[in-house]
Image (cartoon, rainbow over all chains, first blue to last red; front, side, top):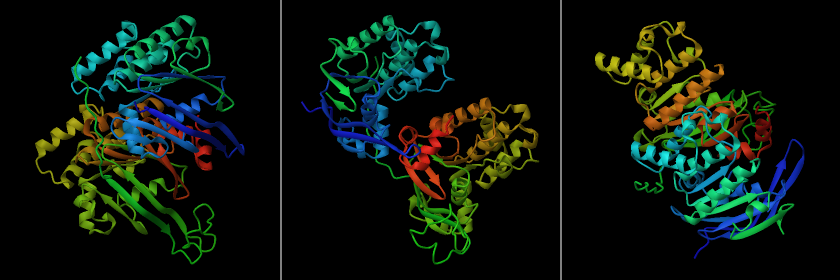
Length: 231
Length: 287
């Protein structure tokens, strides 16, 4: 089977003009993600893990190397040089990026956030509503929170809301950016259960974590990063 | 569970395309007409010509909101005013798909045609509501003025549409006959938006619409703009020096400095991984 994502010698260097410094965030990163796999990257903070994910999502521009993603709409595409509008299409319908930080407007209710997201996947209002409620239940967001603005949510609740909003569109590829950082143990277990569930449903995932225990037995492949390179 | 929608990518031509737009105040000289001339900001050191826009290329695709950021004096407003014919560009071209399938440079058509484009294809919301509204006339008359310019003649239809638009922008019915000079800044801005929308233009130009408004009003105006985009599928070009506004509204962004576009890309990439020294400085200034 063709790989869903192939990184070849990805290198990212930040040029900071104000500080007159260059930071080499990651060098010569090469790996593959097969459809249905869960690939994990671990490493200390500052080792360049997030940079890899952000390059794949095009939040960061790669300095050199290639990232080939096998898109449903376009076939294999080179993400580093893909037209902006095609990248936006892929972000909207194919790849989801999930971190524990809310990336939505603070003045929308939790339910509305998921419904809005569902607009990309369902045509009828009733279907959008139904899909959103199913997701909120699925990710165990208590019903009394549905009509609350999520900036009052706990870290774990925000994370689960983020996942619910992303998953309601059924993305084929999930990027998880330290989904367990700053969560207590009980919440971590919940997140782990979620990931196991998504995996059993066939979602391809690439996740980064700084704590190794959490990853145990979950990943199909595991890479450890130190100072910008795999070891 | 109902079946999810299929999504095929549709290749589309940009609805608005700017090519090599230049605007200078002054005649220019041999020195500053060269491509690689070094200017003091945007002023020629020899002949003191101000080059407000230098070779701007920009595209807006159907149904998208595109942001333009830059510090004051970078040429953002000049750009908007050139597109809306408030200023004559020195050279360059602009093509709009809704106008003759984008085959004609709108800067070169007759004044009459320009008026038609202004009334039917473009909508403009100015930073200063005094530029976009007649302050002594009622809000309804203001909207009617544009409707008449766009060809409406039926008073009942015009009234109904105005009422609808004003309620869309949350101006209560009992204030519709009042003159905008009595309104708060945020309300004036919302009347301006209603006026711009009244002729159903496919392209909306927004020039610093939230500048000078307090935070809650700003949020309301921004929410309104987002709703309008979703509801009417209007393409928008949004100019702002406020990165927060751009982050909320635009998926793609152009960064301007001294009359030039120095960087463009996906908005979150511009904010998280700015490539140009000036953009980095701009992003670090974000609160």
